[in-house]
Structures are given as structure tokens and as C-alpha cells.
Image (tube, rainbow, N blue to C red; front, side):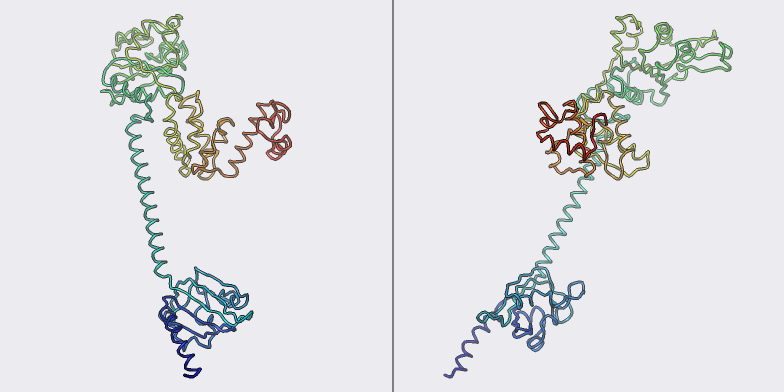
Length: 487
């Protein structure tokens, strides 16, 4: 057997092996022209040996990116192997099919060395169309899951809003145990005709409780007439409550209907009832006991059917002991007392209340809807709220006014101590701050330390020691943040 025959016998197994590969294989010479193509390469891209051999391979199937833009040969990793002798692996490009389709591939270009000389390269590639399809399907499935998750969250929020509307009946918002006890009392007394005394700190929402009692009572279709007892001068008390006729006193230019008559068939809400002057309390007591009164300057008796709900932020029992409030009027008003809990006793309601006030403020000011973050709710829950619900409402309204975009800026309204009560754990939980918010937080924290140290930077008990920093670092931050004593 001759040398040529031996060579042919040796080459046949190699061609069979290359032909049996599932990956496409191209051979290139030193100039990047095709020297070999296996069956898988023909099957994947359609280019035959007749098309490839002796031709610049890059110009045939790698000439442009997937978007059609030019792919310069000098940037081609296949050709890079012919220049630097390194193996180049690529997993995010396309080769062009003979019919013009872009086939996504991953490939390896490996230099062929003869001694130290690069004499060519071999390119092994595979069609990743199916893999990309599966990736797209997984991505689509992930997006669908995300969409369903968002939809479920929206439905959860909707159901939560529905629950709020169930528990906030008549404008009362919250689901804390303290508030539930108050709502149970409202349910118990609303259908009865007895007088109710609502007690609680200023700003807890006593008027809302009174309105809920009225609207759940048989008198709901009749008027709820409010009297702010603290705003009525003593000399005008009778006219305000009972009305007057024309000429009854100087300035009485026409008849006037009093609040008791306006509330006939409905509910009279006596807000801040503890402010009624002692000298006038007996007249009110008679009218409530007898369900009748006379207007100022009139001798005609007017009968009324009025249910009384009173409210006070004073301890009326103590006022009675001190002789500032009539005992008989107190017992007349407090047949059924209701104690409204302060906001600090119902902290779990603060987030819901704050978001409610945020929604109202945004709607009233024509702003895009804003949402409170978890750490902002935590900050609000940590505050004692001496002004109760009224204070919270005012803080939220100011926050909405001062905020820009869709992020609420509580740091612009609450004290530094309140806004610095955001822990690292809360931030790591997925919330974040803008750079501006972070700087404001940093400035507030530094100011708090300086205040605690009486603005001493160094030495024992100085701000540097309190913060665990070098005095020079504290001084630098004071300068950077524009902090100075009294500033």
C-alpha cells in the first residue's frame, strides 16, 4: 500500500468523526479563508463546501450584527485567534444562514499552530435557537408570574381597602384592638336614644365618633348639628343655643333659630362641652331635661326632640369635683361614656391613617398618588403624636405639599430624631433613599449628636466620641453639610 493510500485511510476516520459531530465546524487558513466545513455546519447554516472553501469566512456568515449593522472583520473574535494565538469563546452573537436568517450561536475559535507559527484556526459552533426560545419562554413565564403577582397584590390592596371601608365606618379608619373596642361601643349605643359623652385627648377624632353614632342611629336622615362650645362667648350662649326674636337685644335685627331647634328630630353634637360657662350650664340642663325652651325675647315655648352627643378633652368628673361643671349636667350627658384612645395606643392604625391622609391630600392638591414606604411608616409609628390624628393629618398634608415627584419627604417635616429612626435592617429589607434624603438623614444625625454634646466636637462626651469618629472627620462633615452652632 502506497503513502497516498495510507494517508487516505487515516483521513477517513477523521472526516467521519467531524461529520458525526452535532456542532458545526469550519476550518480557516492563515488569511481567514475557509478550508473545511462539516455536515453539521451545512445543516445549521446552509453554506456548503463549495460556498466556503477558499472564501473569506467572515464575509459569508459573520458580516453584520443581528440588527444589520456592519461587523468589521478586525473586531471578529474568529479572526482574533489568527492574530493573537488565543482561544476566543463567544455566546451572544449570530451567524447568517444562506437564506438570510440570523441564527443565534455560541462558538469557539481556536488557533491551529505548527510549531510556534499560526497556520489557521478551527471554529466550532452550535445553534442555540432552541435554548434562546426556552430562555424567552422562561422570561415570558417569569413576566407572567410577576404580572400575576402584581395583580394579586393589587387585589390584596383592593381587598384591604374594602376591609378598611368595613372598619372605618362613618369615616373612622383603623383595625387596632383599641379602636375595635370603641367601635363596639358605638354599635351598642347608636340605636338607643340615650345621651353619649365622648372623652379623649384633643385631636383623637371625637367628632368622627359622634358622626358615626348619628349615622347608625334611627335619626340618620335628620340633621347632625354641631356646636363648638369653646367658641361661643358667654353673652351669646342663649342666642346660639335657643335662638332669639328680632329686637330681643342690641344687634338682634331679625329672628334667629337656635341650634337646639335646628337639631329637632336629629342629633345635637356639643363639642368641647366642658367649655360651657358654669352660669349657662343650668339653662342647657333644663332644655335637655324638659325637651323645651324659649327663644331670647320670646315667651313662646318650643318643644324639640333632640338626641345629645357631647365631647370633651377634659376629665369632666374632675371638673365636677373642682366645682367648674355641674354634677347634674354631667350625669345627664354621660349616660353612656365612650373613651376614644389616643393615637399612641393604636400604633398599628398609623400607617393606614397616614396613607388615607396622603391620598386625600394628593387628590385635593391635584398631585400624582404617593405611597408611604415601610420605613416611613415605621418612623410615623415611632412618633408619640401628642396631637393625635389631627397632628398626623397636618404632618402628612405638609409632607405632600413639600414633596416633589412621587417620593414623600417626611424628613422635611418631622424632627431629626423622628427621621433618623430608620434602621439598617429596614433599608436592607428593600427600601432605599435618594441621595438627597440620605444627606438630610446624615445631617440630622450629626446635628443630634452635636446637640447631645452641646456642640463640642472633641474631648470626653464630644460629638466625635458619641459617633465613634475622629474629631477631624466630624469637623469635615460639619463643613460639608453646612452645620454650625445656631445654624
